[in-house]
Length: 365
Image (cartoon, helix red, strand yellow):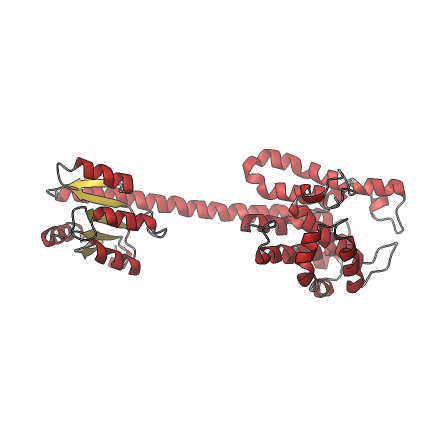
């Protein structure tokens, strides 16, 4: 192994003979750094953290216990294994060191064979742990890609039904991203959003209308205003959407967090703050935050878009309607927190106008 690729061991001992002896034992396999005091060891570690620490306990000034405490206090060093050098009769000291976080001990007088075997064992454990961590990172990345693929497949199910829906998905997903990132920035005490939840909301927004795949074409594509009966059928897309996800959620169990967030959005994005929405008439903060955010994005896009029964409203008119309905349709605090960033919605809508289905599917977020 090249010297640059070797693991690094730091030996901390106030006796020069011990330092020299341990370096001679270990230098063929490891980069060995020597420190005659705890204080100097900490200074060295601040510049370059070792892979393993061999530590004498009885030292003047900063003793071995102090060094262990300092190492375990630093998040960057907490996983570095510490092997203590201890006298034959120092059982109490060993117990204290283990309680502070040491992982093994080597008794004095030091045996070369024992030192090599103990250090090699812990180095192998380090390599094994790092390999496992690498595997976990790779699997996590794979699961993340799988999650994104599932979301895209499900979203495309909706977008292929009709071009208007596809462009609507693009725009509303971006609106949701803007609203969620604004909440992260504002840090309002009632709207604290952690990164996992934020990512799940943004990526799940594209599924909010997935239940429309179960709506008959005669209603979904009707080129005129819907009757009361037809609108009741359209309203069921919220429930149909949850049916599509529920079996996957049951199968995935605890790993289905992102699908549970998607379900919140699907079932709740037509609920209203005053309880007059559908499908269940939930009100206020009982409506999940993800669905309250989606409601603003969804309604804004509906207002600025042309429909068989209406012409598109301007950005100004649409914003006035949302402001007027804050406290009845929309979460009033959420609207207030979002007003400044919603001014950018107009540009987003201009950039992502309705387009031909096959040219826009590739760009779905």
